Length: 374
Image 1: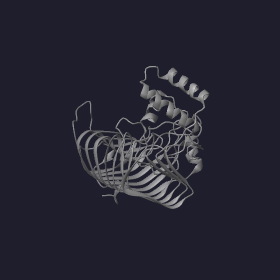
Image 2 (image 1 turned 135 degrees about the vertical axis):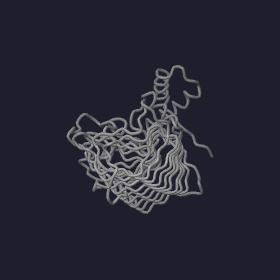
Image 3 (image 1 turned 90 degrees about the vertical axis):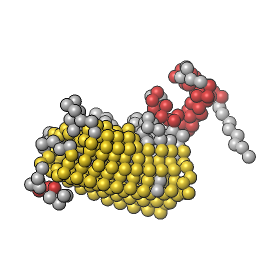
Image 4 (image 1 turned 180 degrees about the horizontal axis):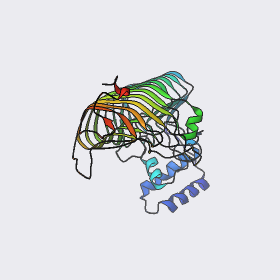
């Protein structure tokens, strides 16, 4: 038996006026889709901002609730025989492009303050925003999932563990419009005040493609991120293969990060570690809250068609230390306008790295912070 919908005609006329005033050249089907979405978003459940973000990630105020949302849960399993959960995100992406959003777009899945979560053997596609977002969670396993979205879909991160502990991401394929896996821990003064780090994160046997990053740390790192292992990663047609990103005002400590056994093919940049990436929630961030980045090991990396091998740019008043590179071969088109490495405010060591990295990274074992990494 079908569903019967009762629509307030005055509301429908108001929505139709909104649509016609914004999209005067849309086809009839697009009008209908937009009207349906406006009807939905008028009544779409709103939830409070995450305390470690202080506001919606895109806009001030609350957030549209995720398609699958849980708070304070334990022992939850989402699984299937590779069945598909389709977020039908294109309309949301178009609203973002046209700047008609009222609040931050919904994730496809978000668990908050939960533990004992397993997500496996499911295909996720076309998320309006981030795909899988465990935040303030512990003991999370995500494996054998496929996550798909067009390369031009905005902010469709694959898996974003956020202020969470003991998270294992394995044996998955991700092809989206943003970072494949991004470890986060809060945004500027709100993340600093909330003070909940991400740690004990394992990422292995992930394959994918994206115009942005393959394995990312940040840029929301204010609660701190430590003890992250990413290994056996295969990346194709990437923006950046490995990206650690933070910013002035973030605060937080990023340390004990190990990335190994990575293959990348066709990437604009192989490795990027930067202290000037990401926006701010408002103007109240503390410019003296400088992030600390130390004890980062990247080893056993092979790349073909990599336009620039690496860029490591720390902060003048908070240099990155203990950056340890070994057994790295990133080949591509290098010329005077495209130097293989660009570095500043960084110290560490490099062994068996080609093209040879910048002078800030020594070529011997004398850098004590790297002696245990090679």
